[in-house]
Image (cartoon, rainbow, N blue to C red; front, side, top):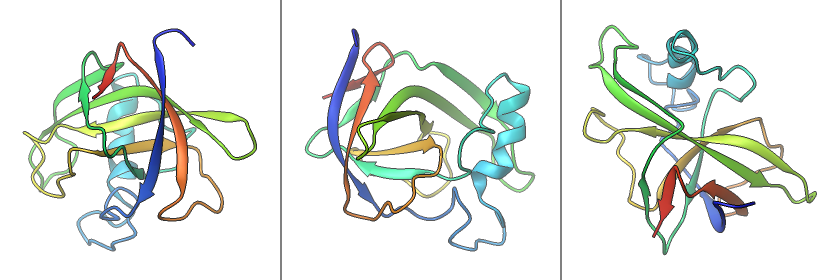
Length: 151
């Protein structure tokens, strides 16, 4: 695929906030479920995807968002939390079956994010549920080089 780059990544443990696994009472079913209606109103439908993220490490590579598929600025999605900026970039995840499935890189902008910061090699992926995925598993993802640069 022209303008796409394949990269080997490793699944890593996240904070559990996006999916609600960490049981933070502020986000009982996770931040993605709470944010989904706001993104939908702005034209991004996340309903086909699992309401959580897969955290991956691109190490030794880092990344830079160039021209995201969509960016939402100053989104006030929770009454007790400050407004945040979010960007989404297209990606594909190559499964062990040889098939790929679409996904989105979910990027809450760190300059507007109040907590739960990521390392420079960590990306969060929103996609359909992948059964049997474990921390430490290697995956191959493809990213759109017009939207995100992998250094």
